[in-house]
Image 1 (tube, rainbow, N blue to C red):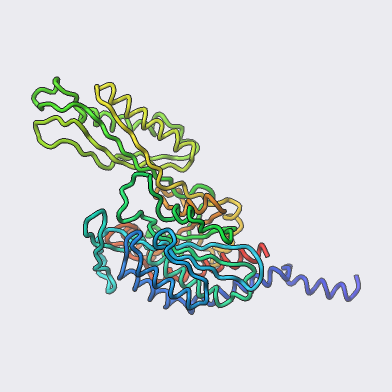
Image 2 (cartoon, rainbow, N blue to C red):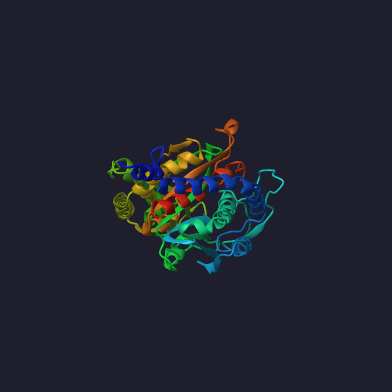
Length: 439
């Protein structure tokens, strides 16, 4: 080999790494390092949003804050997407793929009991009633993290080999005025219907969710099915009203409903092959009757169905319907079953997960671990149905409070602000590593 060729070889490889890898590492190093400069901004944004929470499809103040920030960064911003959503494009200085990053904006109808200086005292209308509102699931942290990521990536836009689409989504928990009837889409599903993953087409999407179940700064991930689908179960049992002292003159829907509830316990435990994936069937409400000595003509029940596999979901839904209808018929009553599939299973694309795992390990100094299946649901699933997606969990509980911290959706749920920096690093580095690996 000549000296010229040796020199060329030494330029192409340093410590066994191609130049392209070194360039990618350099940009990712920079966004990781620069994240620390945005930490206090992110904390300030989170506290402000936490103190002014808004329910699904009412996130006008939050959306205005986000849109103003993104416009200051020089991005093209679209508002009113999927009702109150905000979408912005950051075009890199070089051609390449498009990465989407998503944060949900909405709060919950929960009365806060944290005692924080920036605790919520907000009330909004929820299903026709004035209700206290709280960021009891950490969406305030999601928004603040992504606002900081937008600023972080905007600072290196000329070096990005591709573009970034920022999606700030409303109504992940459902709209504040929505009776779940399956006839109206909301949140991520509505944004997908409106074309948020198109023009330009998105190649991959990343998102995160804070969790009280992991220590601050720890990241949990899972390849494949990760969070459950969620079906809203509605059963109406119709009998024949009569005097409670003369039940033989009517058809008792309360007794039939009790038998249906008992029968539903066998749907998962005895009648469904759960080897592909687990499932859960729960009845959460039952309503019937007006007086102690009157057998009513109707009983209404609602519940939830959770699965991690489309085939299992169809099987469970069919078994629920058969059980309810036939049990009611055996009592001389009738059962009408309606199962509304509001959330699909959140599935992390295995190849994308494997490809990006080293990035997550890097930003956490190895504190990234496999997550168990989560029976909660997420409408990030609708984004990941259309393009490869990776959705991961960010721990927000101080290590000395593990096992004692209130869970998500609790009135006492709290986010450790120190976790925000890890979230900023993770989404920033995932973006730069993905774009440069496909450069």
